[in-house]
Image (cartoon, rainbow, N blue to C red):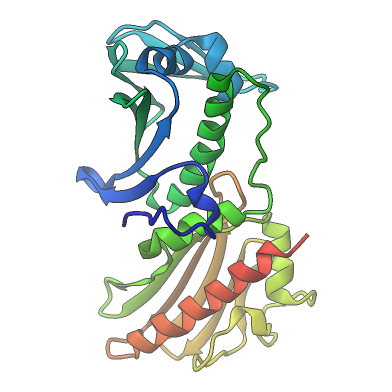
Length: 300
């Protein structure tokens, strides 16, 4: 899905002229983002490859042996651990700088564009549902990069509220749609996965309405959706999991696991026998997840 740069009401328009997601081999995803910079390629090259310049806009401190096969290291300020390492895959001055970072691959391509440059970032990764977190993070970073190139102070507002993250989720619309899966025992599963923008405790509070559920108790309304029956709670582990029966052969399950940057990763499933109304469930649960996500933007 390609972004629409003329929609000035979208906060995701402020940095990148375009952004898109594509499916790659092996179940990986490529995030492609482009921005025009008012500086020649050599100047941009120095800003994205020299550690002293990278330290001003990149999300970690970087050390690099700038040659194909050279080692690149990443260390987050305040982290007492050994940091992470990767390998430089391309170093074609002043055109292409690419490297691995853990299991991800980042490619920064610089092409002349009039009296400036066009910078294209392609970030390839395995966690497809982390794409909006990655996109919003790179927008903040590249906004800072532009300020470094301009020679002024770096003054970039972080996406602490999650507005930018949600704007990218809206752009990458496929990330908000659920899917239907086989369960392996002849049944079906409706599954939604979504990165949320508040801590798990905040999400849990929104879902429970402040009344802690117990096994056997009625399901708090926050965990339900229109036209989906709700039996008693069958499993609860605050603030990470709640499950309940909706059918003698089916379960609804809310799980809040480890996420990317902003908060927990929600995995919401409804299982049931073959023939249950999966189309209706997709509509009902998408509406409920969107309602939850909108409410979290205003949550403390």
